[in-house]
Image 1 (cartoon, rainbow, N blue to C red):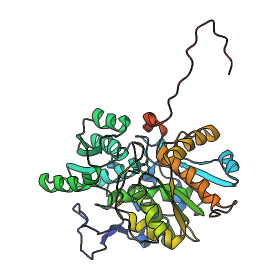
Image 2: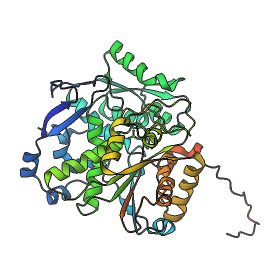
Image 3: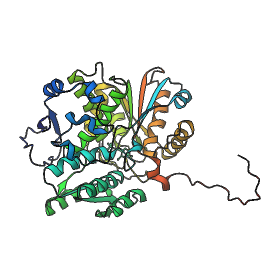
Image 4: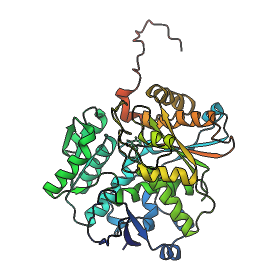
Length: 399
Ligand SMILES: Cc1ncc(COP(=O)(O)O)c(C=O)c1O
Protein backbone atom coordinates (compact mmCIF):
# COMPACT_ATOMS: atom_id res chain seq x y z
CA UNK A 1 0.00 0.00 0.00
CA UNK A 2 1.09 3.54 -0.66
CA UNK A 3 1.67 6.18 2.03
CA UNK A 4 -1.15 8.36 0.68
CA UNK A 5 -3.31 9.74 3.49
CA UNK A 6 -5.82 11.81 1.55
CA UNK A 7 -6.57 13.77 -1.57
CA UNK A 8 -7.06 17.31 -0.40
CA UNK A 9 -9.64 19.42 -2.21
CA UNK A 10 -9.31 23.21 -2.18
CA UNK A 11 -13.14 23.21 -2.18
CA UNK A 12 -13.25 21.10 1.00
CA UNK A 13 -14.74 18.07 -0.74
CA UNK A 14 -14.24 14.63 0.78
CA UNK A 15 -12.63 12.50 -1.91
CA UNK A 16 -12.35 8.71 -1.93
CA UNK A 17 -8.88 7.23 -2.43
CA UNK A 18 -10.12 4.12 -4.22
CA UNK A 19 -11.74 5.91 -7.16
CA UNK A 20 -10.45 8.36 -9.78
CA UNK A 21 -11.57 11.92 -9.17
CA UNK A 22 -11.95 14.99 -11.37
CA UNK A 23 -11.42 18.55 -10.17
CA UNK A 24 -14.31 21.01 -10.34
CA UNK A 25 -13.63 24.33 -12.11
CA UNK A 26 -11.08 26.25 -10.04
CA UNK A 27 -10.54 23.34 -7.63
CA UNK A 28 -7.03 22.07 -6.76
CA UNK A 29 -6.62 18.40 -5.83
CA UNK A 30 -3.47 17.64 -3.84
CA UNK A 31 -2.21 14.21 -2.78
CA UNK A 32 -1.17 14.20 0.88
CA UNK A 33 1.09 11.52 2.37
CA UNK A 34 1.58 10.25 5.89
CA UNK A 35 5.01 11.88 6.05
CA UNK A 36 5.62 10.79 9.66
CA UNK A 37 5.36 7.18 8.55
CA UNK A 38 7.53 7.80 5.44
CA UNK A 39 10.13 9.34 7.75
CA UNK A 40 10.03 6.35 10.10
CA UNK A 41 10.37 3.82 7.25
CA UNK A 42 12.79 5.63 4.87
CA UNK A 43 15.78 7.94 4.81
CA UNK A 44 17.78 9.72 2.11
CA UNK A 45 20.31 6.85 2.29
CA UNK A 46 17.56 4.29 1.58
CA UNK A 47 16.36 6.36 -1.40
CA UNK A 48 19.91 6.50 -2.78
CA UNK A 49 20.00 2.69 -2.84
CA UNK A 50 16.82 2.55 -4.95
CA UNK A 51 16.46 1.95 -8.70
CA UNK A 52 17.93 4.46 -11.16
CA UNK A 53 14.52 5.73 -12.22
CA UNK A 54 11.77 7.79 -10.62
CA UNK A 55 10.48 4.75 -8.72
CA UNK A 56 13.34 5.24 -6.26
CA UNK A 57 10.84 7.70 -4.73
CA UNK A 58 8.09 5.08 -4.34
CA UNK A 59 7.25 6.10 -0.73
CA UNK A 60 6.34 9.58 -2.02
CA UNK A 61 4.27 8.25 -4.93
CA UNK A 62 0.56 7.33 -4.96
CA UNK A 63 0.89 3.76 -6.26
CA UNK A 64 0.00 0.73 -4.11
CA UNK A 65 1.96 -1.96 -5.95
CA UNK A 66 5.20 -0.47 -7.25
CA UNK A 67 6.30 -3.84 -8.65
CA UNK A 68 3.43 -3.62 -11.15
CA UNK A 69 4.11 0.02 -12.10
CA UNK A 70 3.77 0.91 -15.78
CA UNK A 71 7.35 1.96 -16.31
CA UNK A 72 9.74 2.47 -19.22
CA UNK A 73 12.58 3.34 -16.84
CA UNK A 74 11.73 7.05 -16.77
CA UNK A 75 13.33 9.63 -14.52
CA UNK A 76 16.56 9.84 -12.53
CA UNK A 77 17.86 11.92 -15.42
CA UNK A 78 21.29 13.51 -15.07
CA UNK A 79 21.87 16.92 -13.55
CA UNK A 80 24.65 18.12 -15.84
CA UNK A 81 26.99 20.91 -14.76
CA UNK A 82 27.32 23.40 -17.63
CA UNK A 83 30.58 25.23 -16.94
CA UNK A 84 31.07 26.63 -20.46
CA UNK A 85 27.54 28.06 -20.60
CA UNK A 86 27.95 29.43 -17.07
CA UNK A 87 31.19 31.14 -18.05
CA UNK A 88 29.56 32.65 -21.14
CA UNK A 89 26.87 34.08 -18.86
CA UNK A 90 29.28 35.28 -16.17
CA UNK A 91 28.02 32.71 -13.64
CA UNK A 92 29.73 29.96 -11.64
CA UNK A 93 27.17 27.29 -10.72
CA UNK A 94 24.71 26.33 -13.39
CA UNK A 95 23.37 22.82 -14.05
CA UNK A 96 20.87 21.43 -16.53
CA UNK A 97 18.35 18.79 -15.46
CA UNK A 98 18.28 16.87 -18.73
CA UNK A 99 14.76 15.54 -19.18
CA UNK A 100 15.39 14.83 -22.86
CA UNK A 101 16.70 11.41 -21.73
CA UNK A 102 13.22 10.16 -20.85
CA UNK A 103 11.65 7.39 -22.96
CA UNK A 104 9.52 9.63 -25.19
CA UNK A 105 12.09 12.44 -25.11
CA UNK A 106 10.38 14.70 -22.57
CA UNK A 107 9.60 15.07 -18.85
CA UNK A 108 5.96 14.22 -19.64
CA UNK A 109 6.89 10.57 -19.11
CA UNK A 110 7.10 11.14 -15.37
CA UNK A 111 3.47 12.20 -15.08
CA UNK A 112 2.36 9.51 -17.51
CA UNK A 113 4.16 6.65 -15.78
CA UNK A 114 2.91 7.48 -12.28
CA UNK A 115 -0.64 8.41 -13.26
CA UNK A 116 -1.13 5.48 -15.67
CA UNK A 117 0.19 3.15 -12.95
CA UNK A 118 -2.33 4.49 -10.45
CA UNK A 119 -5.22 4.48 -12.93
CA UNK A 120 -4.53 0.87 -13.88
CA UNK A 121 -4.82 0.05 -10.16
CA UNK A 122 -8.16 1.91 -10.09
CA UNK A 123 -9.45 0.01 -13.12
CA UNK A 124 -9.55 2.97 -15.56
CA UNK A 125 -9.77 1.87 -19.20
CA UNK A 126 -9.80 5.17 -21.15
CA UNK A 127 -8.30 8.56 -20.38
CA UNK A 128 -8.48 11.73 -22.49
CA UNK A 129 -6.71 15.07 -22.60
CA UNK A 130 -5.66 17.98 -24.78
CA UNK A 131 -1.93 18.27 -25.32
CA UNK A 132 0.24 20.57 -27.37
CA UNK A 133 2.00 17.37 -28.40
CA UNK A 134 4.57 16.04 -25.98
CA UNK A 135 2.15 14.78 -23.35
CA UNK A 136 0.05 13.18 -26.10
CA UNK A 137 3.07 11.29 -27.42
CA UNK A 138 4.15 10.25 -23.95
CA UNK A 139 0.73 9.11 -22.73
CA UNK A 140 0.24 7.14 -25.94
CA UNK A 141 3.35 5.10 -25.16
CA UNK A 142 2.39 4.47 -21.53
CA UNK A 143 -1.24 3.72 -22.42
CA UNK A 144 0.01 1.15 -24.94
CA UNK A 145 2.28 -0.43 -22.35
CA UNK A 146 -0.60 -0.60 -19.88
CA UNK A 147 -3.12 -1.90 -22.44
CA UNK A 148 -5.47 1.05 -21.93
CA UNK A 149 -6.58 3.84 -24.29
CA UNK A 150 -5.52 7.48 -24.25
CA UNK A 151 -7.59 9.83 -26.43
CA UNK A 152 -5.41 12.75 -27.55
CA UNK A 153 -6.73 16.15 -28.69
CA UNK A 154 -3.78 17.88 -30.37
CA UNK A 155 -3.33 21.21 -32.17
CA UNK A 156 -3.21 21.16 -35.97
CA UNK A 157 0.47 22.21 -35.96
CA UNK A 158 1.54 19.41 -33.58
CA UNK A 159 5.09 18.11 -34.13
CA UNK A 160 5.38 14.96 -36.29
CA UNK A 161 7.35 13.24 -33.49
CA UNK A 162 4.34 13.33 -31.16
CA UNK A 163 1.92 12.34 -33.91
CA UNK A 164 4.12 9.36 -34.68
CA UNK A 165 4.07 8.31 -31.02
CA UNK A 166 0.25 8.29 -31.16
CA UNK A 167 0.13 6.52 -34.54
CA UNK A 168 2.69 3.84 -33.79
CA UNK A 169 1.08 3.12 -30.42
CA UNK A 170 -2.35 2.93 -32.15
CA UNK A 171 -3.82 5.50 -29.77
CA UNK A 172 -6.64 7.78 -31.00
CA UNK A 173 -5.75 11.37 -31.84
CA UNK A 174 -7.80 14.32 -33.13
CA UNK A 175 -6.49 17.62 -34.46
CA UNK A 176 -8.33 20.61 -33.00
CA UNK A 177 -8.62 23.75 -35.10
CA UNK A 178 -9.47 26.25 -32.37
CA UNK A 179 -7.00 25.37 -29.62
CA UNK A 180 -8.72 27.68 -27.12
CA UNK A 181 -11.70 25.24 -27.17
CA UNK A 182 -9.70 22.05 -26.63
CA UNK A 183 -10.08 21.79 -22.82
CA UNK A 184 -13.85 22.21 -23.03
CA UNK A 185 -14.03 19.62 -25.83
CA UNK A 186 -12.13 17.08 -23.70
CA UNK A 187 -14.41 17.70 -20.71
CA UNK A 188 -17.53 17.19 -22.85
CA UNK A 189 -16.16 14.04 -24.50
CA UNK A 190 -15.27 12.61 -21.09
CA UNK A 191 -18.76 13.23 -19.72
CA UNK A 192 -20.38 11.78 -22.84
CA UNK A 193 -18.19 8.66 -23.04
CA UNK A 194 -17.37 7.98 -19.41
CA UNK A 195 -13.63 8.61 -19.97
CA UNK A 196 -11.34 9.98 -17.31
CA UNK A 197 -10.24 13.59 -17.87
CA UNK A 198 -6.47 13.76 -17.32
CA UNK A 199 -5.96 17.37 -18.51
CA UNK A 200 -3.51 19.54 -16.56
CA UNK A 201 -4.67 19.84 -12.92
CA UNK A 202 -7.98 18.04 -13.64
CA UNK A 203 -6.72 15.08 -11.62
CA UNK A 204 -4.08 14.73 -8.88
CA UNK A 205 -1.64 12.02 -10.02
CA UNK A 206 0.26 13.51 -12.98
CA UNK A 207 1.62 16.15 -10.64
CA UNK A 208 2.95 13.41 -8.34
CA UNK A 209 5.00 11.97 -11.21
CA UNK A 210 6.40 15.35 -12.22
CA UNK A 211 7.22 16.03 -8.57
CA UNK A 212 10.08 13.55 -8.90
CA UNK A 213 12.02 16.18 -10.91
CA UNK A 214 12.25 18.28 -7.74
CA UNK A 215 13.05 15.27 -5.55
CA UNK A 216 15.89 14.28 -7.87
CA UNK A 217 17.27 17.82 -8.14
CA UNK A 218 17.52 17.99 -4.33
CA UNK A 219 19.11 14.55 -4.12
CA UNK A 220 21.57 15.30 -6.94
CA UNK A 221 22.64 18.51 -5.18
CA UNK A 222 23.49 16.43 -2.09
CA UNK A 223 20.05 16.92 -0.45
CA UNK A 224 20.16 20.67 -0.86
CA UNK A 225 17.94 23.15 -2.61
CA UNK A 226 19.23 25.32 -5.44
CA UNK A 227 18.99 29.11 -5.26
CA UNK A 228 16.92 29.45 -8.41
CA UNK A 229 15.05 27.27 -10.91
CA UNK A 230 14.43 28.20 -14.53
CA UNK A 231 11.43 26.35 -15.96
CA UNK A 232 9.63 26.69 -19.34
CA UNK A 233 5.99 27.06 -18.39
CA UNK A 234 2.93 25.87 -20.25
CA UNK A 235 0.06 24.75 -18.03
CA UNK A 236 2.24 25.12 -14.94
CA UNK A 237 2.12 21.55 -13.63
CA UNK A 238 5.88 20.99 -13.66
CA UNK A 239 6.72 24.13 -11.69
CA UNK A 240 4.02 23.46 -9.10
CA UNK A 241 5.21 19.85 -8.81
CA UNK A 242 8.88 20.76 -8.28
CA UNK A 243 7.91 23.05 -5.41
CA UNK A 244 5.64 20.39 -3.87
CA UNK A 245 8.69 18.12 -3.89
CA UNK A 246 10.81 20.65 -1.99
CA UNK A 247 8.01 21.23 0.52
CA UNK A 248 7.64 17.51 1.20
CA UNK A 249 11.41 17.10 1.61
CA UNK A 250 11.46 20.02 4.05
CA UNK A 251 8.62 18.48 6.07
CA UNK A 252 10.47 15.17 6.11
CA UNK A 253 13.54 16.99 7.41
CA UNK A 254 15.59 15.55 4.52
CA UNK A 255 16.62 19.04 3.35
CA UNK A 256 16.90 22.40 5.04
CA UNK A 257 16.85 26.03 4.05
CA UNK A 258 14.68 28.27 1.94
CA UNK A 259 12.87 27.29 -1.22
CA UNK A 260 14.45 28.50 -4.47
CA UNK A 261 13.33 31.48 -6.48
CA UNK A 262 11.20 30.43 -9.42
CA UNK A 263 11.83 31.86 -12.88
CA UNK A 264 9.38 30.73 -15.52
CA UNK A 265 9.84 31.41 -19.22
CA UNK A 266 7.26 31.64 -21.99
CA UNK A 267 7.32 32.56 -25.66
CA UNK A 268 6.38 36.18 -26.38
CA UNK A 269 3.64 34.79 -28.65
CA UNK A 270 1.82 33.09 -25.72
CA UNK A 271 2.82 34.69 -22.43
CA UNK A 272 -0.23 34.99 -20.17
CA UNK A 273 1.79 34.38 -16.99
CA UNK A 274 4.42 36.98 -17.90
CA UNK A 275 1.66 39.50 -18.57
CA UNK A 276 -0.06 38.77 -15.24
CA UNK A 277 3.27 38.88 -13.38
CA UNK A 278 4.23 42.23 -14.94
CA UNK A 279 0.81 43.68 -14.12
CA UNK A 280 0.98 42.47 -10.51
CA UNK A 281 -2.13 40.34 -11.04
CA UNK A 282 -2.71 37.10 -9.13
CA UNK A 283 -4.37 35.31 -12.06
CA UNK A 284 -3.94 35.21 -15.84
CA UNK A 285 -6.32 36.61 -18.40
CA UNK A 286 -6.66 34.26 -21.38
CA UNK A 287 -4.15 34.97 -24.17
CA UNK A 288 -5.60 35.84 -27.58
CA UNK A 289 -3.75 34.86 -30.75
CA UNK A 290 -1.07 32.23 -30.17
CA UNK A 291 2.11 32.74 -32.21
CA UNK A 292 4.71 30.18 -31.13
CA UNK A 293 6.51 27.23 -32.75
CA UNK A 294 4.87 23.78 -32.65
CA UNK A 295 5.31 21.92 -29.37
CA UNK A 296 4.84 22.77 -25.70
CA UNK A 297 3.98 26.06 -23.98
CA UNK A 298 0.78 26.40 -26.01
CA UNK A 299 -1.34 27.23 -22.94
CA UNK A 300 -3.32 30.44 -23.52
CA UNK A 301 -5.14 30.06 -20.18
CA UNK A 302 -2.78 28.00 -17.99
CA UNK A 303 -4.66 25.95 -15.41
CA UNK A 304 -1.72 26.41 -13.03
CA UNK A 305 -1.37 30.15 -13.67
CA UNK A 306 -2.66 31.31 -10.31
CA UNK A 307 -0.58 28.78 -8.36
CA UNK A 308 2.64 29.59 -10.24
CA UNK A 309 2.12 33.35 -9.80
CA UNK A 310 1.67 32.70 -6.06
CA UNK A 311 4.92 30.67 -5.95
CA UNK A 312 6.88 33.49 -7.61
CA UNK A 313 5.43 36.09 -5.25
CA UNK A 314 6.12 33.92 -2.19
CA UNK A 315 9.61 32.67 -2.98
CA UNK A 316 10.87 35.35 -5.39
CA UNK A 317 11.73 34.95 -9.05
CA UNK A 318 10.11 36.31 -12.17
CA UNK A 319 8.21 35.45 -15.34
CA UNK A 320 10.19 36.20 -18.48
CA UNK A 321 9.09 36.28 -22.13
CA UNK A 322 11.44 35.19 -24.90
CA UNK A 323 11.04 35.60 -28.65
CA UNK A 324 11.02 32.57 -30.94
CA UNK A 325 14.25 33.83 -32.48
CA UNK A 326 15.92 34.03 -29.05
CA UNK A 327 14.73 30.52 -28.17
CA UNK A 328 16.04 29.01 -31.41
CA UNK A 329 19.38 30.79 -30.96
CA UNK A 330 19.55 29.38 -27.42
CA UNK A 331 19.03 25.82 -28.77
CA UNK A 332 22.20 26.28 -30.80
CA UNK A 333 24.08 28.00 -27.99
CA UNK A 334 23.38 25.18 -25.52
CA UNK A 335 24.31 22.57 -28.11
CA UNK A 336 27.51 24.36 -29.15
CA UNK A 337 28.70 25.11 -25.63
CA UNK A 338 27.58 21.96 -23.84
CA UNK A 339 26.47 19.32 -26.34
CA UNK A 340 22.97 19.37 -24.84
CA UNK A 341 20.43 19.28 -27.67
CA UNK A 342 17.32 20.82 -26.13
CA UNK A 343 13.93 21.52 -27.66
CA UNK A 344 13.15 25.23 -28.28
CA UNK A 345 10.59 25.30 -25.44
CA UNK A 346 13.35 24.37 -23.00
CA UNK A 347 15.86 26.72 -24.59
CA UNK A 348 13.58 29.63 -23.60
CA UNK A 349 15.09 29.11 -20.13
CA UNK A 350 18.62 29.84 -21.36
CA UNK A 351 17.45 33.02 -23.12
CA UNK A 352 15.40 33.85 -20.01
CA UNK A 353 18.40 33.36 -17.73
CA UNK A 354 20.38 35.84 -19.83
CA UNK A 355 17.55 38.38 -19.45
CA UNK A 356 17.35 37.77 -15.69
CA UNK A 357 21.10 38.40 -15.41
CA UNK A 358 20.74 41.65 -17.38
CA UNK A 359 18.07 42.74 -14.87
CA UNK A 360 20.39 41.95 -11.93
CA UNK A 361 18.08 39.21 -10.68
CA UNK A 362 20.87 36.61 -10.42
CA UNK A 363 24.04 36.61 -8.32
CA UNK A 364 27.10 35.16 -10.10
CA UNK A 365 27.91 32.46 -7.54
CA UNK A 366 24.49 31.07 -6.74
CA UNK A 367 23.32 27.60 -7.77
CA UNK A 368 21.05 27.87 -10.80
CA UNK A 369 19.09 24.94 -12.22
CA UNK A 370 17.79 25.01 -15.78
CA UNK A 371 15.15 22.39 -16.53
CA UNK A 372 15.60 21.05 -20.06
CA UNK A 373 12.13 19.54 -20.34
CA UNK A 374 12.67 17.81 -23.68
CA UNK A 375 15.03 16.73 -26.39
CA UNK A 376 15.56 18.72 -29.57
CA UNK A 377 14.87 15.45 -31.42
CA UNK A 378 11.17 16.04 -30.72
CA UNK A 379 11.21 19.36 -32.58
CA UNK A 380 13.35 18.88 -35.69
CA UNK A 381 10.97 20.70 -38.11
CA UNK A 382 11.04 23.82 -35.89
CA UNK A 383 14.81 24.12 -35.98
CA UNK A 384 16.92 25.88 -38.63
CA UNK A 385 17.42 23.63 -41.69
CA UNK A 386 20.59 21.57 -41.43
CA UNK A 387 22.11 21.86 -44.89
CA UNK A 388 25.58 20.60 -45.65
CA UNK A 389 27.50 20.18 -48.92
CA UNK A 390 27.29 16.93 -50.88
CA UNK A 391 30.78 15.77 -51.77
CA UNK A 392 32.34 13.29 -54.14
CA UNK A 393 35.42 11.15 -53.69
CA UNK A 394 37.49 13.83 -55.44
CA UNK A 395 36.44 16.73 -53.13
CA UNK A 396 39.21 18.10 -50.93
CA UNK A 397 37.68 18.22 -47.45
CA UNK A 398 38.36 21.15 -45.09
CA UNK A 399 36.61 21.66 -41.73
C1 LIG B 1 8.79 20.36 -23.79
C2 LIG B 1 7.83 21.02 -22.86
N1 LIG B 1 8.33 21.81 -21.89
C3 LIG B 1 7.52 22.43 -21.00
C4 LIG B 1 6.14 22.31 -21.08
C5 LIG B 1 5.30 23.01 -20.06
O1 LIG B 1 4.90 22.13 -19.08
P1 LIG B 1 3.97 22.47 -17.87
O2 LIG B 1 2.58 22.15 -18.28
O3 LIG B 1 4.46 21.61 -16.77
O4 LIG B 1 4.08 23.92 -17.54
C6 LIG B 1 5.58 21.52 -22.09
C7 LIG B 1 4.13 21.40 -22.27
O5 LIG B 1 3.47 22.39 -22.48
C8 LIG B 1 6.45 20.84 -22.98
O6 LIG B 1 5.97 20.05 -23.94
